[in-house]
Image 1 (cartoon, rainbow, N blue to C red):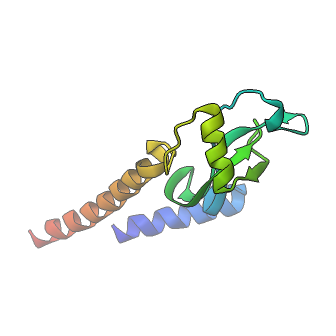
Image 2: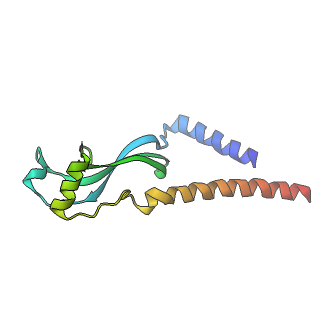
Image 3: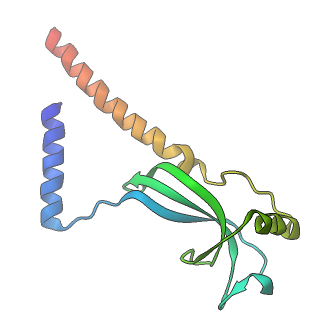
Length: 140
């Protein structure tokens, strides 16, 4: 099993160096997820874009599979989710009252909260199971 893991890592490093392949790794990346598409109100217009309610958080992950999220907060963001404006607690309460919004403490999807953890635990379990089953075959 150790030889297989070593061979896979060696092949990946060799392939990456020759092909200039970039493995997407976020340690940490700032991500903005759209929570609510607010009505097109002139009070929520910045530049030429209307703003929507988003959730800014730091995400740790590899190959587009999120492993951990932290430091989440609500923000106002444009439709492209490339510009955001921080909200104070008072501003957030005002938005909730004005637009009759229900806001949870963590609006991230199941995939971002738990899905990546399940995949990583499954991969780790598979590697451990493969390593232990090899030891069992050697005992016989």
